[in-house]
Image (cartoon, rainbow over all chains, first blue to last red; front, side):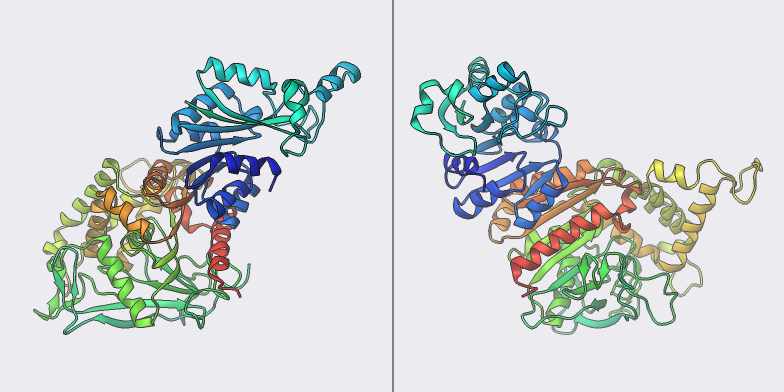
Length: 197
Length: 383
């Protein structure tokens, strides 16, 4: 499993009813169901990933998360998860709003477009950055709403959401060194947020 | 695709009789119940690879292969799904399909002889529910020495049986696969059902349901019911593609009240061929089974029931199905999830309307095959 998903799994905790939006191959949900006694549901619009979820025995709805979210009952989950997917949705603000509506806790992980290496790629090379967390070329990227950690935090403040915790991650999605916290928006390749309210 | 399973035959077994009659959900009693069924593949030593096919309104036990003397080009109604290497792989699974209670294809129904009178039941056959259909399926399994199913699968009314079964008997089914099904009929569904019923019951040859042995049958009424039903099974798109506004056996319209358009001719043919193979009373009874189906009427009880087992659910719908549209399937999935069940859901693109569940659409079959693979590996069927 991707290291950032381990962080997400620990933030979710045990015995939770989890909605994993853009659940990919279902690895996170499988871990949550098997090791954390969670219930869960994934939403995935990639066919291979949908079949991978079936293969793992993870319940999943095939579809676009932005279409599935409005169909989901208010408060029907304990926790909604969006891992490395916010930047790929059409309306990140609406998705966050819907995640709040369907669950009192939200866990969001995202790549930080403010990381110094990306800034340098643009400033020095004049080229769109390609990194391990953002591995696409500009012309084939599904990532249409990139933001920095500062941007994201401002959006959550505007929405009246409370950041309960923030874990900074390195380029491989592992917990970043303590140093990184000195200037997170510049030094952290990504972050996992646990939000409430 | 392989050649399928070849020759098969329908078997019969009495599952209720004498001291052990069938008591229906309503409390009414059917003294003797015989079941017509077919099986494909082999039951493994652990008896862990049984898959039960629940058929739809006009189906029967002959789901796959072909009968001796039949045209091999016209196999059982779900042959494209069942057989070696097919999604319900008979090299791995023991597949069972039985004609439902109230049916007219070998299982006890309104055309059967009432032991009390020595005459066919007709409308004296008691009203039945999906639960009663399941009771008889389970009695058949008891005869076959099977206490647990790897899967129950069905389309339309068949999906309803798989659903009711998994709710009422937690721990008995590993996976319930429901295709083009619904947890409750809509007002529009019931309205179509009412028109079909009126057509049959107002046929002068219906004779209050006692047409057996009169040499007459309510063919016009049943044919009309089937024509109405068939319209709801197809999509506008599939009708347009199949018939358009083309004229039957001619280039120019004949202008008149007789059959002129191809679609009219097709519906007439569907109606008439149905009359030859189906019993009007069974149509009435099974229509009512669907109308009254409401498994989530007590959601708290459903929640309690499902918590006692660990059945997984696969809910599939088709985008061109307007009889049981994707909304029906979404509601079904949502109600199951609300009751705590693990539900995988997918809407499949297919032009064939409600009938899509009978077509070998690759996306559909791959999803069923993938779900069956998962059930098999979780149960250790392939080991």
